[in-house]
Length: 145
Image (cartoon, rainbow, N blue to C red; front, top):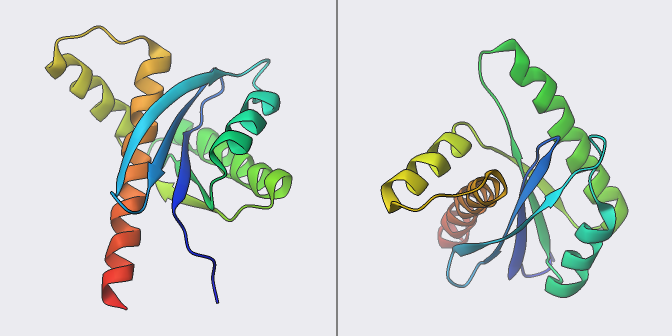
């Protein structure tokens, strides 16, 4: 029997910043956490470990950039690698989910709210969108059972 999932951490992987959100299956909602700065295109594993220790998630979600543009293939490969590294380091089930246009949507949400958001805040808002997409899909699967 599979362990019950209650807490998830979602990531919007980038080579400069990694947006992060935490979500709960009970509410199917997520909230942004502080984005983590990457150093020389490498994640700050210490900061990620601190988040994993603090939130004790049962699932990790990584946004997978997909589109028809060739430059996206580079980021798709990087996000996939990041997902495999998370799984290997923390031994927590990790899933990739299509994140098409989440950063653009995050910018639009920020504009509509009338508040200026920094790049790290936008990335964490994108992580919220990624996480909530996964949470909705999870809830839908649970309802089918």
